[in-house]
Image (cartoon, rainbow, N blue to C red; front, side, top):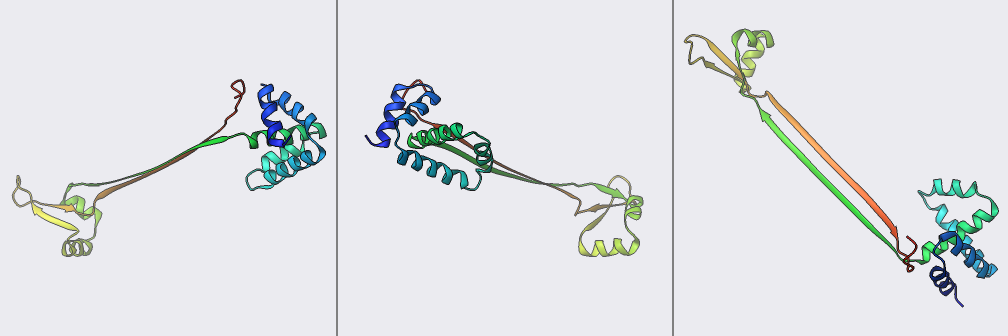
Length: 167
């Protein structure tokens, strides 16, 4: 009987993972056990499995043997993976139209800076419509920028079993 057939038979007969592993371990030859050990070691050496490897190294000899068999059983069963990713960005620009009195402009910039801003168009001067002879200024570069970026990623792994009792 091949190893795959043994795994399928044990999975049908036992609903508990540990019982199934013990039963499979009893029916496996030394070569099959060695093969299971080598596959499990290759899996533990992969990048990202350092925590699993530390846990495995802390186990006793019998626990390690069962861990190898459980890994083999899980590997031989069908697995499914559902991965969802999402990304979104938001960008907004608020331009203020805030008119400043001459006193506020004088407090903010020197007279030389005011002339430079008027020539470049950054500062716009206008006579106040309600009060003749008074001047107001508006800073055209007075804007508020807001950028928001979001990134989400999740991964859900599951193990599919032929026996309806194990999940």
